[in-house]
Image 1 (cartoon, rainbow, N blue to C red):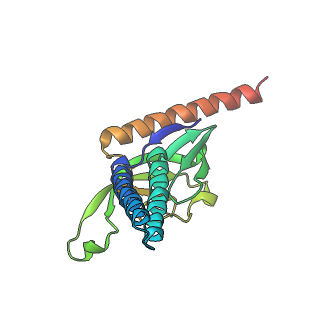
Image 2 (image 1 turned 90 degrees about the horizontal axis):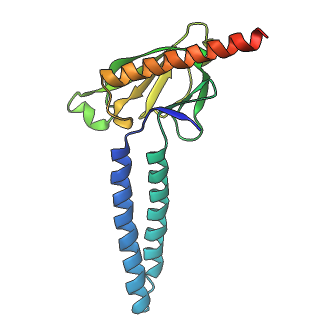
Image 3 (image 1 turned 90 degrees about the vertical axis):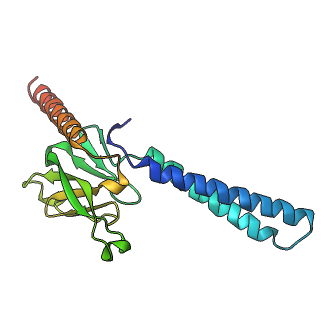
Length: 184
């Protein structure tokens, strides 16, 4: 079981879930009406229903999936679709607040910025200095992971302080475990 450090933006996925439920209802109703009247359009309703169910499953998965979590001495970074990156906790130096562009096409008309969580990685962790991410969620280069606030829980100083406190606790626990294992 993972300890969730930074949750995802559940509001976005709840809105998507409500929309999927509405489309599924419309698809189900269309299928029912088409079946009553022997119309050939019942396949269209079934397709809407199935696509909406798939969108609902993706939304539920998104609601349950964190952005950052900790398990067995590793930071799990959910910054792309699919499996998370699993970083050794010793590779993480600190968290701080940052700011980045929204990465939304409307930005060309109005320049807007969003709050980000920046994860600074140790200089010695060269293997972790650059990884592929989903650009709308995060960027990862030059030893920094920048998680966009659009796709995470609301970010403020309290969240960053909580992340740094959890990081210190995890690193202390790992150091204690290492000492116990190396000294019988």
